[in-house]
Image (cartoon, rainbow, N blue to C red; front, top):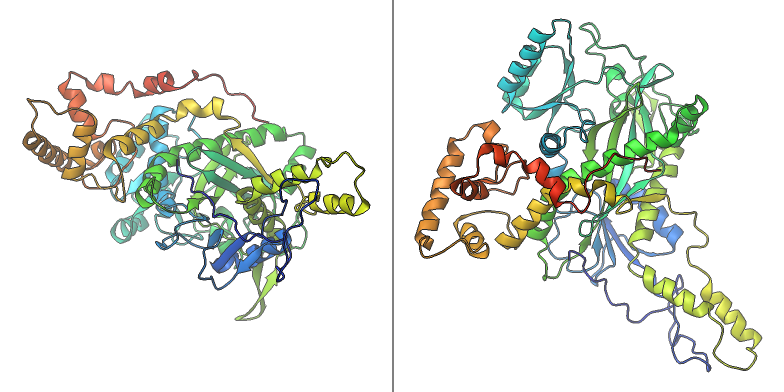
Amino acid sequence: MYQAKPMSAQGLYPYGKSRSKGRSCKRSSDRSEEYCPPRPVTVDSSKARTSLDALKISIRQLKWKEFPFGRRLPCDIYWHGVSFHDSDIFSGLVNKFPGMTEMVRKITLSRAVRIMQNLFPEEYNFYPRSWILPDEFQLFVAQVRMVKDGDPSWKPTFIVKPDSGCQGDGIYLIKDPSDIRLAGTLQSRPAVVQEYVCKPLLIDKLKFDIRLYVLLKSLEPLEIYIAKDGLSRFCTEPYQEPHPRNLHHLFMHLTNYSLNIHSGNFVHSDSTSTGSKRTFSSILCRLSSKGVDIKKVWSDIISLVIKTVIALTPELRVFYQSDIPAGRPGPTCFQILGFDILLMKNLKPILLEVNANPSMRIEHEQELSPGVFENVPSLVDEEVKVAVIRDTLRLMDPFKKKRESQSQQLGKPLASKEEPSESDLASASAGSAHPEAHLPSICLKQVFPKYAKQFNYLRLVDRMANLFIRFLGIKGTMKLGPTGFRTFIRNCKLSSGSLSMAAVDILYIDITRRWNSMTVDQRDSGLRPGSSFRSRCDPSPVAWLFLRSHGWTTTRLAGLRGAAQLLSARKPRKPRKLL
């Protein structure tokens, strides 16, 4: 299990009030146990960075205790603004998963989704066809030429995204692989080139995307929540399908808020349904008024989110096991992800990217005069983001079960046969008041495991990760060196009188040599000795070596897709609406 036990709550004092000297929990003479509301949850916000303002509001609404500069004693929750690298946190909860930032980089995300596209092409058709540069440049050129030769009328557009870029930095559009800018990218930094979605849904003649907030509450068991509202970010120039004369019009093609805010047409608005940034619910309301089936739109988006997380979890679990091995003290992790989704003209959702550190700022910069800016509160951002952070904290509350249990016990009738006094009734009434009664309903909706039966058959690579962790005994490392290879052989009971440990070492050297002689495309389907686990649609070279030695052919190895269905608890069935 990956879950760490929450800190023991000793020295409890009344919820939401400061502890006074000599104060103790009241005991009713007719009761055998003490009933005392848990102490406020403590939150270390010293590394919250740009999410600090929204976090402060959330903590204040929950009546929890914030430590803005940290403290010597452990806190219940640690809130980090970027990534989690602290090695001195041995308990509590942290709002980042190890390895998440690396997993949702454009290249890694494309590889993870491509694996699933190879196994389940129909289920993963929500992600544009992608090529990784510079490794797959020749493949990109060859495939584009092949399609054009077969269909001369095909005039594609491609979008190039630097792997480490953010906020629209370095993104540009091209019509042909021979574009001179692409040559510069090949020499400068790794990137992903994708087919550009030319027919997006437009509102007010403008292209827009959707930022949805997804809470990954747990990896084992897998728990996913989606916020019921999100943000819609609009371009600031009327959209036209791409052609050579408008490829450089970034305000027309790119929806990035950090880019469009510098446009003279950007509209700041205090209304959630107007301006260049609006709530997603206002968009749905507008579509509903035109007869669009909103439940179907939401159902497709939920399906996209679940399938994307399933594609990411195998390697995330290995990262987690490496950084926080089972049986060793460590925090429990959770994380809010930002999913950027584009609706096509036919309302099909397309995944653009996943952000490990979505912006949680609740203000924007406004230019008062040339070169002079001022931070101004953004009501749209505050409405959505504060709710997401606050309700994430509510779901992760380490004392939630204890608080609910005590509230139920206080609500029971007194055990005495005598009539209770007015003071006893008042005390019971005050104690049974729910601490969250003043808060709105939780804005996060659970989608997994709620809909697990429909998607469990997709978790084939997740099962492969389980085998990897189990047989290699991952503890504090993800490297498969000679020692790890020996462990694999012993755990799988593959050694025998005819296979000595010296022979195992020779096999490892042979596998390494074969790996180094493979092409890039062949490496996409294996586990490189000496490097981190990469989930692939084919077995790792370790398994490949033994399967091939036992007569497995390439055709049999290609049958993994059918094996996914056999491994699942239920056979895949026709998808149904999730809402």
